[in-house]
Structures are given as C-alpha cells and as structure tokens.
Amino acid sequence: MQQDAIAERRNNIAPIPFEADAPFLKIVGELPRELNGTLYRNGPNPQFDSPGAHWFVGDGMLHAFHLEEGRASYRNRWVRTPKWLAEHDAGRALFGVFGRKLPDAPTNLTDGGVANTNIVFHAGKLLALEEGHLPTEIEPGTLATRGYCDYQSRIVGAFTAHPKVDPVTGELVFFGYNAAGPLTPVLSYGSIDAGGKVTRFERFETPYASMVHDFIVTENHVLFPILPLTGSMERAMSGKPPYAWEPEKGAYVGVMKRNGTAKDIVWFRAEACYVFHVMNAWEDGDRIIADVMQFEQAPLFPHPDGRPTDPEKSRARHCRWTFDLSGNTDRFQQTYLDDLTGEFPRIDDRRAGLKSRHGWYACANPRLPMFGALSGIVHVDGTGKRLGQYLLPAGDTISEPVFVERSKDAAEGDGWLLAVVWRARENRSDLAVFNATDIEAGPAALVQLGHRVPDGFHGNWVGAQ
Image (cartoon, rainbow, N blue to C red; front, side, top):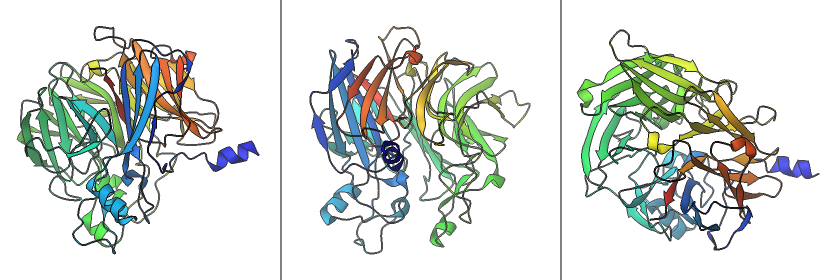
C-alpha cells in the first residue's frame, strides 16, 4: 500500500500553492560552522493551471535556505512578474503555451515572463532569470521583486538564464536568443563588468532559429551552440509545435574571440545532438575543450509533426567537445566520457572557463525503473573519470548540486555540495550538505523542511556579505 502511494506521487513537478517562512529548521547531523550564506533556488511553480502549458513556463518561485553559525532557516516567494501580478488580480490563468495569451485574456496584456530558471548574484544585484525576458531583480533578504533590470537601458530583449561570471575579471558574459523577436535566428551577446556597467551589447544572425539554453565561455573565447531543437513561427501559427526536433539541420557551434566581433565567428559542425547544460570549458593550445551533458535527441519536445523523440536517445550523458582552432577542420569532435544518465553539471566556479579537476552532476539510478528521475550525485575528475557516486533511497529525487568553497583560498574542490532532496515517502524536502570530495559518505547534514520543494532548475550560493 505504501509503495502504491509512493508510485502515485513519484512525480514532484506539481506546484505548491503557498508562500512560507520557516525561521528555525530541524538539522540532522551538524552543519559546518564555516557555511554562512544563502542557497537560492529557482523553478516553475504555476500560480494557476493553464491548458496546454509546458512545465517550462510555470511562474518562477524562489526558495532560499539561509545557513548561519550552524543554524538554518527557509523562505519561499513567487517572483512577481507582470504576468504573475496580472493573473493574481484576475484570479485565473491568462497565458498558455510558451507565454502566448489565452483567447479571453485582456487585449492590453503583453508580458508573459516567468523568471523561473536561475538566480545569480553579480555586482550587488540578485537576479532571477529565464531565457525569454530581461533579468528580474530580487531583494536578497525578503525575496521581494524589484522589477526588470535593463542596466540603464543598455540591454534589451531576451537574456540567458546561464550567464557566466569570469572568475579572474568578475565580468558577467551573457547572450540571448530570439533577439529579433519570437522564433528568430538572431542572438544577442554582451558583457557587464564587475562594477555592474554594460561594456558590450550586439546582435548577430545564426544558421537557424534554435532553443539556445546555455553557451560556452573560456578565457579568450565564447562559443554559441545552435542545435536542431528548432523554432518556427510558421509551425506556431498553424497550431504545430513552436519548438521541434529537426536533426537533419545538423549541429553548429559558433566560436568567437572575446575581444573580437560577431563578424569573426567561425562555425563548426557535427552530428545532430542537443545540450541543455555545459559543465565547463577551457583552452588547450590551439584547441578548446568543452564538457557538456549531451542528448542524442532533444527530450521534452516532439518532431515537427508531433511525434515524440526516442526516450532511449533522449537522455543526457557526460560528453567532451573538442574544437581545433588551427584551421585544419570545421568539424568538432564529440566523445562520450560516461554512459550514465545525468544532468545539471556544476564545477567549483572559481575555475569557470579554466581547466578544472573536479565536477559534479545529478544522475539517474540505473537500478530503478524510473527513467529521467535524478536520484544521485556523481563526482568526476578533469577527464570525466568517476571519483565517487551517491545514490538516494528508492523513490527519492535530487536537484542540481551547488558547490561552495570552504574559503576563498581553499584548493579547487575543497568545500561542500548543497542539493535539495525530495523524500517521496514523506512527500517533503531536505537540503542535503555533502563533503564535496567524499559524496559517497552521504550527507554530513540534512536541513529538514515540513513541506516539499517542487522539482526546479538552478540555484546558486551567495556567501554572507
């Protein structure tokens, strides 16, 4: 009977219908006293059901776990975007598939932004991000929504949910797809210096319209993957999938020098694949090495005619891309480093864009009949070799693992991994704290919540200021 109940609610995607504050949380084990700051996490949590709406477009809800001197507290808040406010006032959904207005929505309503994918801290600003709109600034303590941040009108349009912070210069490097309007083959690219000033913003055309979730930044280069999860306004207007898997278009990656311009982009090609997330990338002489989580076919989206993609090929595996910049070939190599299903790769961010020796990602338990449920963590070295693996009890699932260094001058990988875990039997969540280089030992501490945190996307640690 208990197993049946677990099976019924094995899915942790459904939203929670409330905001909450929990000032004193129970801790199992002992939180490291050096761990002082806040883990912010973002994910879809729709305020209202909307017919046909994809999970990706649910309203953003922020979850903040504040750790201080061995104690823990929690707060969650919806991001109060213009869409959220309009629907809250109306008491019902006003937007449907991919942010399109429902037929009975007010005619003057245009903004379907959800700010539901990531949350980053840069130049004194805490920003909730999704890839279709400008960043939304958040008040760090209260999680109150301050509104869109356009940096004194220096940036416009879509802004990636995966900007990169250069650990040497403090510069934030970003891009945006659909930069000339919905389902267009145009990207924007820019940078914001460590003081919060926009130093660059430009646009350029790509081989075709694609869903570009993440990109690649190294010390001297930036790479733009254009992969065949394609966007089509013609399809969207005829009631077909706006985004669909078209492998015949092949995979492109544009390589540009960071001090160059879009006119200098060199396009490399490879067999069709899809990547949501990049682990890290670095330069090695005339080569660029990029470690990604690669799918043979895009998951969650169909072929143009509505047929689903192959589930066996719609799983991500740790893969290495190699680009030869010497001009000998315009093909890039794709080499799988492991056969384990996984997603949400992270590194010690002090090595972002530089050669790294440690990485982690959430993995699926190969012994459980629940494809796609992330239920463990893998620790790998700089070659992709597994250094450790931890699997949760049957039925439980885990979120993206976030690395926190022990101190600013600690060795690479010396610190902790923080991840939110859903306990299926109890239908609630824990914040699990692991020793980052000994994950097989299991969590050193668990911060226990009385309710569940729905499956989400990304988060980051902000140390005590």
